[in-house]
Amino acid sequence: MAIYKFRITFEDFDDVVREIDIKSNQTFEDLHKAIHKSTGYNAEKSSSFYVSTDNWLKGDEIAYLPTERKKDRVVLMEKSKLSGFIEDPHQKFYYTYNFDRPYDFHVELVKIILDADPNIEYPFLAKSSGEAPKIMEQNSPQAVDPRGASATAGEFDFLNEMNFVPEDTDELEAMGEMGINEKERDDEDESEEEDEFGDEFSDDDNYDDDSRRDDY
Image 1: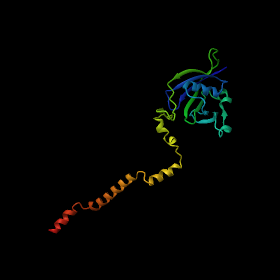
Image 2: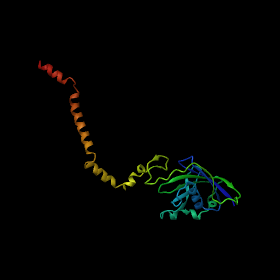
Image 3: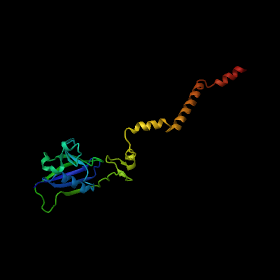
Image 4: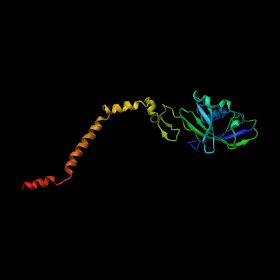
């Protein structure tokens, strides 16, 4: 029984690396769960592997807990053996975990071992380097943005916390017209009026002096 050694890295966190050895007749679901046993994430999240080119362009999708809309267009991880999708000794898969708050991974086959070790239970975590970033939760005081930027959960989820919907923009604009920031607008209007009168007499700085000289 051949063993595949996969190297798994976060797309936005290069220093976090996992290497997992897994039997060729095991499934993508087995690999999915092994990855998150090593990261500490909840594996019961909608996720997908994509057969990938060398440049990480997505191809066929292999899904776990797909939405109803996607069910007819994808194959399922639990029904897909790894060996059925290995066409290259350095086969690559693009992997997205948790579509609600996604993390993207690069999964690359780096070695094929011809014989399984009878003393090892597969999947087997062969290497672990770096700490997986914390999952951003709505009520977490501090978390890491999956795209690599550090942010507070409150900042990241401001519109979600306010139950914002696109239709609210009309209401917000109407509120602005009905008095929100009205003081600031009044101050600006007064400033503009002062500038207007100032400009009217600014063309001739000696206006007052000239008129006084005419009196004498």
